[in-house]
Length: 329
Image (tube, rainbow, N blue to C red):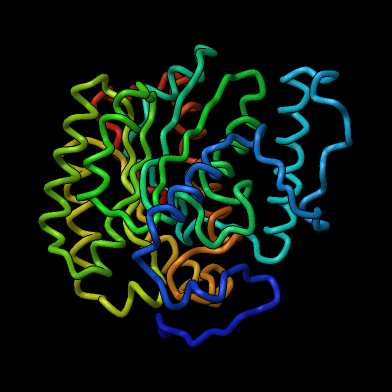
């Protein structure tokens, strides 16, 4: 099956008309505004727009009359319902052949098992900020936070969205200290490489910067790290050779530095080539960014692997503490 299927707007795809003319170089002010909006946790991100059937609003009650916990639970239920509505269109299934775990995420897993607060930083560009999602609730960091809170309802879980549209490793390295290391996270999910491919940057240079960034994060406190490679989409597939090199090099960096790798490119390709899902069902009309379903399924599969790692710790599975690499394939 062709990886480049022509596609048009469908009624449920959410994409600004101008997106097709601007795949990579999103204005900094717009990107940072999106990132700031997406940075809110599900307990803070009620959309000001009129609610659609899949975005049922919480019953009107003064915030002063409700406890923080009660409001957070209401919001988690709301997002859970929305996730169910999205997956009613197309089920979110793991890649055919099952999931092969290659290690664990010991730092974040041990925190969750012990009932201690957990801080996760989602670091990346526009697909972390949530460009293409219909609201901040539907970007992948907020979807992931909602899933983990449903699984661990008594845990104090914070997922910080540090995505800025249009960036890649050179720009990300400039804010690594302030937006990642200084936050003292338990886990860092680093989405990187797509804009480097679209800009024709040397994949080798990107890999070197990412490896340096991983070294700095590890030296600062040993947070679990998961790299997320480029997305499978028409815009990326037009630069197939560069994309292939980027995917391989990021995988090699993850192996050498003993960190996780979420193979987003292969996962999304499986959606299309093996599960026969049309590209336009998970990518918006610009041919690059994911839509609500794409973000939701990405977050679901990533969250499943975190939950699996916690289960390993609870069962006493003997996994070396310095081996965190895993592939949900």
